[in-house]
Image (cartoon, rainbow over all chains, first blue to last red; front, side, top):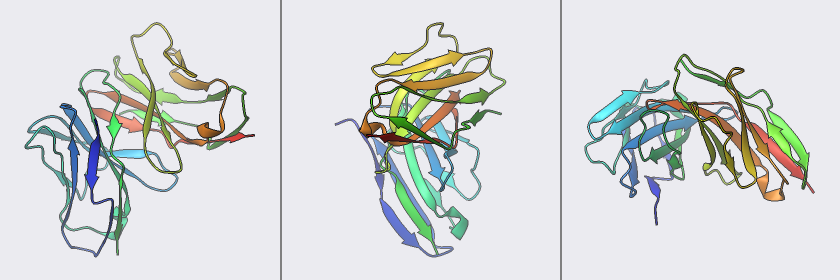
Length: 115
Length: 112
């Protein structure tokens, strides 16, 4: 089944404790992206990747890191999480991200709470 | 910079009627893609419809159609024959060269 998987789905952690949220897709998509969604707001793009080893900042990259060493994986790293990073996080992928793009396939979301 | 504005925080529609969800956008790019996604209360994001900026015909996908007016920079979603299962949050988004911006969404409630 074609899908984007994220782990963990739920995470409660403490301020400053490094964490990684994994994202994996099995559709051989070139483009992957991370978003955060806060109550009452739409999705805001954190980082995106047009292909392996190519990543770029979205609108809200502060406090986050990403890497794209393999085509299928795009982990999101919070080196020193803070309470303002409490949010619902989505990973997405699409065939390509260049030009006018294609529809994105979203993972199920990761609900992160930082205390 | 790209911007999406969805001016209707909440909308109600009677079952079986049509409803239009508004979306206006701002971008300096000549080439871009416009997307609509649905987010039910269960939280997943579901792709509905896509319109390329150079597409001359309005996109349609089943009961969904996109009323694209490029000069006015609007990309309204029309849902025909609303069903109870259409109750959800709807997001308009713009994408170009990997950069993606979403609106704040419209909550649609379908009344029986």
